[in-house]
Length: 277
Image (cartoon, rainbow, N blue to C red; front, side, top):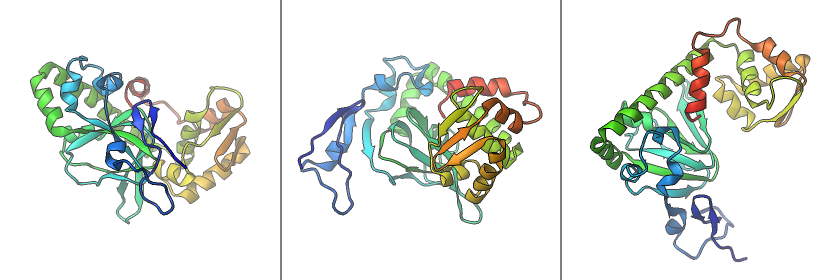
């Protein structure tokens, strides 16, 4: 069966995955099919670039291109030199670290469209986590050398961009502090409520990730997640595979809310609206 490249939102992307027994292979050069020219205007609205003039952005990107990578592709390991950062245009990327006992802990699941790993490039110079694609993904790898050289030529842009990164790092620090204060029940409730489309009444949500991944993201074992979901049945939360039905969203929020909102609650909400997840 003949298959041809089809235009996508970020260029012409080959629909065939490389590797794997029985999978068809394109007669054209695979690398040429997977790497496409990037239009800098496609990234202009990202929070990292919102202070960058349109005529300066191409200078910072240094000829970066869109690459289509299959699921399971390792982008970088924790501790490796932070010689680039990434923009996820499509797909899904997992950021993880290893615990002392050798188990993997998922730090973040990056969803499009978002940047990631830029803070490491500016700060320690080494990646603090490991990054791997969880699905076939369209990514832009922005090399550190031309990017930093461009910022050196445009000092005012650099100051504005670093201010945005500082706000994002402050937001992450608050998220970590909040997670450590929460019980497993509060973490699961917060996650479910973040998926609910309305603030009151009944709601049905579809889990965007496998339960094992959700558990790791919430800092618990899969068995603990199952126990919490079982406990919530008595409060009108019914979980069937990847679908969760909530009888009363407001009641669930009241059940799982902390005693008092933190002093930074309003600032946290403002940061979430501004920065990528």
